[in-house]
Length: 200
Image (cartoon, rainbow, N blue to C red; front, side, top):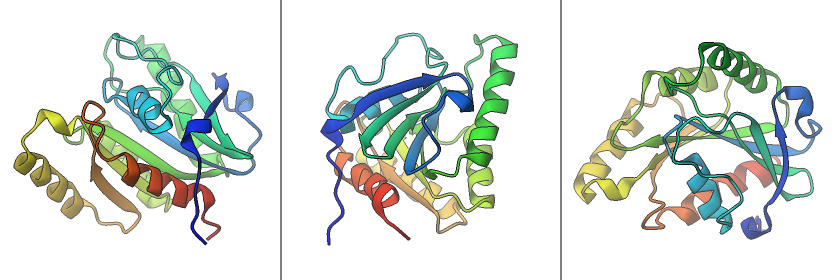
């Protein structure tokens, strides 16, 4: 039987500053992570076909909570705070680091992570650390090379192959994506669906 989700039915659930404020830790959820300027909110809005689902700001670092969205009964997407933005106060960065570490370490309903990066920057140190941690605990990761429209076809596929070869885990997959050109939507939706509905 083909597994399917209606991403257009996504609904906002809650904004959480702490793990205790998140929805009950049951069911399954896929989280979205990445640098503050990687385009996480735009990606979420595109795949759900809902322009206002996740707030988009011209100022990086505005997502300062863990925002949960329901895709069905006990099936969720979670937009995590962006990282790597220098203007965010040090104490807030330290709080995010601690909270994110606890979330990734203890959240039992977490079944996968979408790591969004600007293809022109490839992977930053924070991206690589997050990948290494996820691989250590066998958490599946899907690397989304966003803004692929900013590079030529040949150059973007070169980055894609480079990151694929650099991954040493079968739990890591990589794809090209463009919010502007609306390319890569089905591939991303299929990966999310597999990790939200697959009862492995």
